[in-house]
Length: 361
Image 1: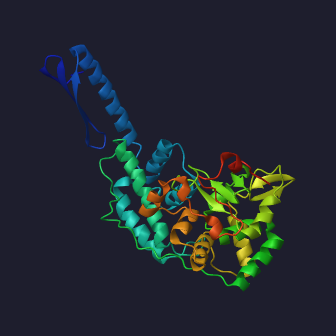
Image 2 (image 1 turned 60 degrees about the horizontal axis):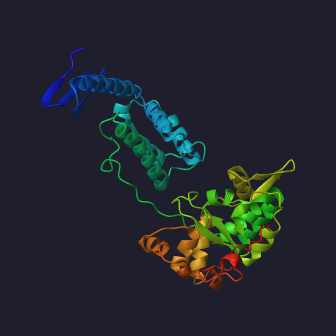
Image 3 (image 1 turned 60 degrees about the vertical axis):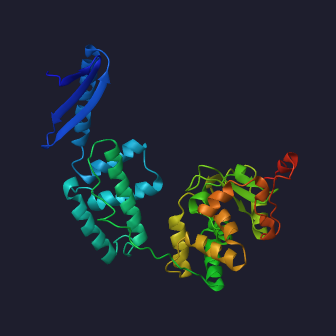
């Protein structure tokens, strides 16, 4: 095997490794090496082996499914949300060869914006399409960073972000009461989580993962811990007075704040989409997502005069102002008791022993 090694000076060499790719392209690695000639030869062979492995991996990318499987492998597995996106994309576009993928993706976007899904009966909205595009672009970027692809064909110039119109869903008190009446009969385990979500803006994932150790009835807050939120920042969720009896009544051997009982065992709610949809159908509510409760709760707080920064703190939304706020001292924490009677927010002036007096359950 000929080694393309050039001597640049005393103990300095230039290694130039090339190998033609089976698809007609050429792979290449160039590197400067400091050391002996024998060391340069060993390094050359190691780099050539690395180039062979890259080209072997690149041969795996015959279809879009191959790319997604590689992406999943490098991430160490998909989250639940990413699994849903991946499964849908594989069903619709998985067999498309990568060279033809951008054109097929454009056609797919045009189709899903006009034709309702057989499963949901609805067309795909701009926000959902944007999430699909971001996921696809990330998969290509992962292959590029691994030096298995040269460029990302899903450019922002060719696939710009589509304009999103936020949902504006409002339910009358009568409709909400009907929904709660249906839940009390058919899904009583959804009543507490829905009541809480309509008062305090939360993400569904935050609520179903709330555990007993996150509850602090002395301060009347629930801690959403660092690393468990969308932006990885933790924050406290206040407990409104009408929800305090529920949290105090949670059985001592139940580890979950929102739970269901199956065969005498306490289980987390998990993805309660089927039960939620059934209750909406029985209540005669055609289009209401659980995530809509987050917008309703935030709007209600603002209408009651709660300052923007407090709502953002409770909801976990971030901005430049909020980033600066997180760096302030503990003494500047907003007093939630001013807006939620019965909620006590500890400040730097509160003694440590007092702050440890927690009543849980």
